[in-house]
Length: 276
Image (cartoon, rainbow, N blue to C red):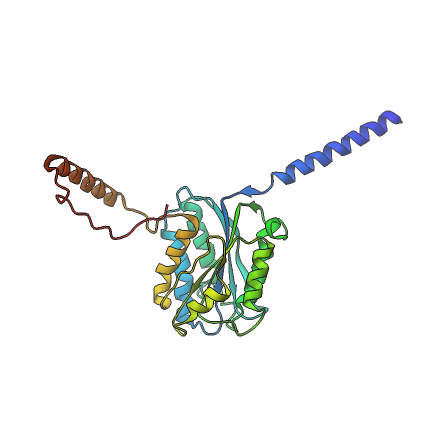
């Protein structure tokens, strides 16, 4: 009987250790976890709604995510109790996975496919409160399948809070829970000073920043630039012919400068830069 009891104890201990080992390796390590919080309140009309959703879709379809390694989810929000995680946590580590994320956004939110879920009041504080526990164990929530050294909330909208939780309090509570940064993208169509309100009530944390869209037509470029900063991707995917042409310009310029030893021989105008 003692031998049987000893065997049973060892078997149970082994199973426990195996279970612990499995759970400790279950989460996928990524550099960053980003939660995209998108305002679809009533002030966003149907055309603006499309421009906003298309902006995210275009960004994930066109930016170059080679070498990236982050996890993202996509939340739409409106009033105090109107939040929806439309796309769950997804690893993005190349262009294929980024485009799959874009397709998931399209399938979840484009009106020709799925009915718009909300169009009510504007409660960014409640949206932040909704997003925080979805980051998983880093913020005291249930495991979301990923772990990272940096957790970011990315929130965009066209208006100030008029409902729900106090925005500044939600911001402070998010940082206290473990969120590293909250970045904002105000759309100034109806409120030219909305960027100041976002800066004072939403943007906070290490390395946080504000990216402004003057209107919804400007949103696509603004969100692409913002995502580039957050995950370190170039703002465009260079075409092969463009790379060849650039290489030719550099070689030609170098040869010219060596031959004539004249610093004014070649003038190159830099029209943009990449965030690597």
